Each structure stands twice: as structure tokens, then as C-alpha cells.
View 1 (cartoon, rainbow, N blue to C red):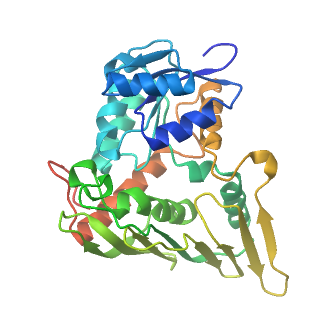
View 2 (view 1 turned 135 degrees about the vertical axis):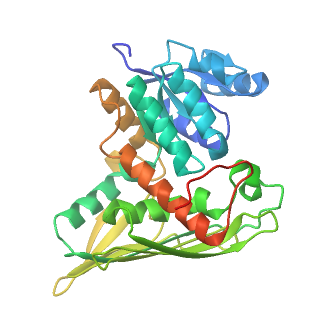
View 3 (view 1 turned 90 degrees about the vertical axis):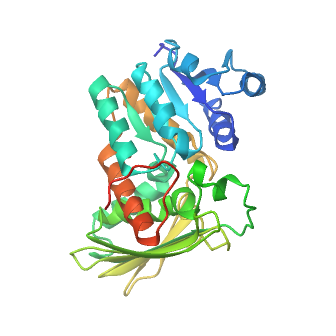
Length: 336
């Protein structure tokens, strides 16, 4: 890191890479110094778009760039193990998009590699870094709604997505669960931890990926989570957390909320809204700031997005896929 800021490299040039880079260039303590793609032309065009000084036509060149403090891996999740592993092997710190990997085995390998090298590694679960989500979890932890009894969350897109689309391609880890369902599962586990029991059902495509999946998670405490994701119907993307003494509702966009409402018996509903000072609703800057804070503090993982929590979510996603019969080409997984 320089005295002026943290130097970022961007690995991949798709839509999420562009959205993240656009937020990075607005942060005064972030400097985007390099971008890589498997296509030199794509990397060059991306670099010109965002004023990035170095563009590489292969991932290895970015991983070996010693002027890069941290690499943001924005490939499809089927390539996360290879891309993030390449960067960690070269001594780079890594922020890796979600789903973190295809399965828990790959996630364990990356976490073990980062810990062996003493490098920073974090899943880009921006929801966990969102100020309103942090406020919500603080209220729950402080007992505002009592003991958590149920969690409900949904994330569905209207589609339709043709068979050639990435979301329906088994080779790219397609399906609703890893792309969308990771949010409801992560939300439930943020509040309740890893479940003790998992059941699930899904509708599969002709290609063998899940078009929509419903999961019921349960804990020995008696808590339940009802979760749903879909590629065939646009849902309200809502969530609620019900406790023994109250309820919190997120009326839309639960993974990047604009507001939520706290309901408690005998009291008027209390609305908590996004502070304008925190920036626009859809910003990815909160996770970028958390990465840079951790790097400056010499931390190798974030307390907001701990690696053990990421591993626990991948174990749950593996278990759900096991229940519904989704496997990806050449995949080796632990049977949950």
C-alpha cells in the first residue's frame, strides 16, 4: 500500500467488475492500477473506460504484478477457485465475488491457501457490509425482537433466460441457488449461524441446473428459515425476521435495503432508513472500504465477512444441491 491509498487490480471485465470499479474510482483512498481478462482487447477496453494504467490479456500477469495490493476477482463463480488461487499463490490479497466458489471443498482450499500464505481473503458479500444490515443485526443481537424464531427471504428474477445464458450453463455453475440463493442463505446464517438440518426441493432445467429452489433450514434452538430463489419469476426480494418479542421486515431489496421496519408489541412501528451520507443504495463501496480498513490494520480476514462464515454458507449450499440433485461437470464435492 502507498501513503495515498490501496492499489487494486480487477480480474475480469463483466458487469459486476464494471460496477465495482465505478465505485472504487470514487473512493479517494483507492487506486485501480491494473485489470486482466482472458482477452487482451477486453482488458484494454476496460482500462480505457476507467483510466486504468495497465491492462493484461491473462490472469497470471495481474497475479504477478507486485504493485497490486489486492485483487478483486469478478469472474463467474465456476472460475473463482482457479482465479483467486492464482492470485493467492502469487502473494496477492483477494476479494472474491459470490458465490465464493462452486462448493465447500474449493472454498476450504482457498481459505487454507490464504492462511498458509498470510494473505487477506474475503468473499464479496456486500450485504454483510451494508450499514442498514449491520444496524439490523445489531438490533437483533441486542434483543430488540427477543429470541429469533423464524427467518424468511426470497430472491427471484423474472427471466426468461435462454438455455445459452450463463445462468443456465452447468459449466459456469448456473442455476438460481449459487447466483441468487446465496443471498437468502447468507442472510439466515448471519442471524442464526449454520443450520442443524436442511431440506429442499427444486425445479430443474433440461440442462440440469435449478430454475427455482425452496429450502427449509432448522436449528436445534427451534428456529426455522424459509428461503426461496428463482430464475423464472420476479419476487419481491423481501425478508423478515421474527422473534419472541417482535419482528423486523425488509420490504424490498433485502440484500441492499433502503429501509426496514421494526415491529414490537405495544409500540408504534419504527422505520430505519439508509443514511444519505452512506451513499447510494446500490453502492459496492462498503465492502471495498472494509477490505481497505482490514489491509491497513494488518488483518488477514474481515470480522464482518469471516472466512468461517463463508465456509458454513458453502456447506449449506452443497447440502441443498445434494437434496435437489444438482451437480456440475467434473465437480468433486463432499457429500453433506
